[in-house]
Amino acid sequence: EVQLVESGGGLVQAGGSLRLSCAASGFTFDDAYIGWFRQVPGKTREGVSCSERRGGRTYYQDSVKGRFTVSRDSAKNTVYLQMNSLKFEDTGVYYCNAVHDGRGSWGQGTQVTVSS
Image (cartoon, rainbow, N blue to C red; front, side, top):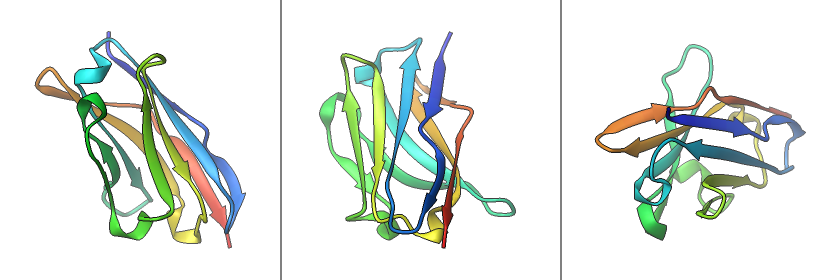
């Protein structure tokens, strides 16, 4: 069974930091493209960052470049999103998405709230 479990969300003041984790199981971690998305009520889910398989390139939405860093730990089958200098507009539910074996899987999401 494929599982993606996000954690690390919470309430933080603007300018603060959070580190999100996405623990993966049920597929070959190193062969998967794994991304972070976020969604706020009334808006479509948007991509924030993506990590290519096997330690390949990483990609970021323009609004988070220089502030967010995505990394992978193959020993733990976990992807991290380090978020620094958080802004009010970073508020949302953050989801982990994995593309593996010709299919995509989503986690349940973790709430990030940035107070201004």
